[in-house]
Length: 618
Image 1: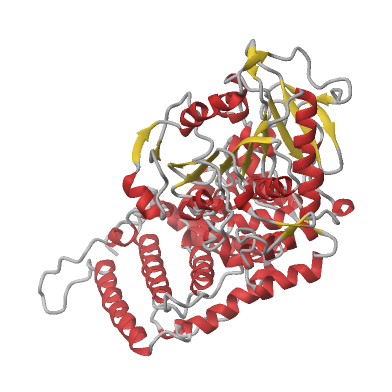
Image 2: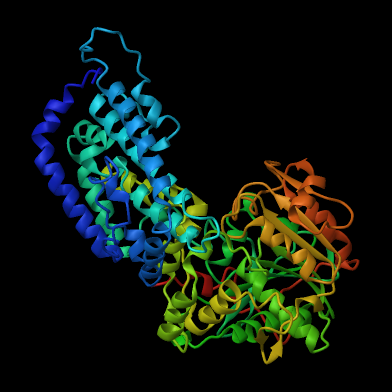
């Protein structure tokens, strides 16, 4: 190696046995706390490659949280990888050997060349450029760590290239990519104290204090049963998140209905109802005043009602999809109409809330009920042909396993759902926090969005099983008459009101090309808007900050998303402004803002945000 090693490495050498023991203890405790899955089966042909033999699979805590899915995924890997042509593997091995030789030449460039000829190898740091895990100077100041990171990067790149060799028509290719990503990201040298120079340096600089804090962080998370992504002590629901003034005006076993206090002298005659997802809490729409869609809508002169779903326990483990539609969405519509004394209202559904809302609107239309004046779908899947990253968790065997275990009663634990979502972005949402919390002993940052993300919700088993089979697995909801809700066949074509559809371009949960299909499933006039960024950041894009951009296409909506995007124009700023302009005519005129929440029948029960949203999943 051609770089000097700092003096503290001499000290570290004396601490190495202690560090190794600490790493082993932390791994064992962490796996026990999170319910580790165990070592996955070895993948065919991996061990044939130089350097791969030493990459023993790490017991990944993220896999443990979704154990029912992992057996199917690993079986798919065995089958799919066996289909790779041998000549392709041979070519990959040849290329790998060449790059490994180049890496070795860079690593040992300080050693004199036997033939006396000068060499100019590619700098060792070239192999790890652009990887934020190895961006700190510590990875570049001493050759052993830089070499370890470079070797890992080389192995990781060629491991992922093997996945690319799986035939594209193989339905299991996405599962293979998922499993390989879990393994590759888990094996990063940044995840281990012994091979992480940043963590070692901090241990010495703090005279062991970072180790003490790391163990405290680990023990605290063991109590929670999850990895802390933010300083949760910095937030409290109803105190500094979910603070828009309002009242609970109705409650039942499924939800509480919030009515927000108006901030304008006049409001739209026809009120607005928000139906958020029952996966996670509603207050993603009301984090803090500056980034609250709830606060924005109230400020635009709308009487706003919002469904706050109950966080189900075993006592609510019998709740079904029909129950969420009939006793949830439809009941909320009825109460909002009764309080506002209006025959119609505007409704909004976000993510799974949008899927619930769409099936509810179909049910109402079948009954001849025209209570809805307009509908807005935010990052909502109705056509599940392409389910994005979440499709990796769904096949017949996996869905059947859920139906047998909780389909007739029980709950899907919120922490399992949260871990599954986090595993889709393991470096950002798992290993980043493992390194900072448990190796460096750092306190997680204060971030309202990550606080919301950690506040998970359970799902009732019957509802969850119906959802998996009728949407992700069999894609019935978008096919007229194929699925039945509340005893009535679903037909989304019966939704014949103005529809605003928002998708986000980098959404890995709801691919924008799939959300686009909603415009051709409903019968009403549709406006499709594509926002920048992802599933959450693309939606929560405050108009006041005027950041990012969105795309719109005036006139008739083309048949395909590709044709739409080709015609679309890019507009700077937030889609909120475009939506507010679209929504203005839907108010039905203006009336004086109500002086009090509720009415004689539906009296205020407690101030917003209410009790339900404060119930945490156990």
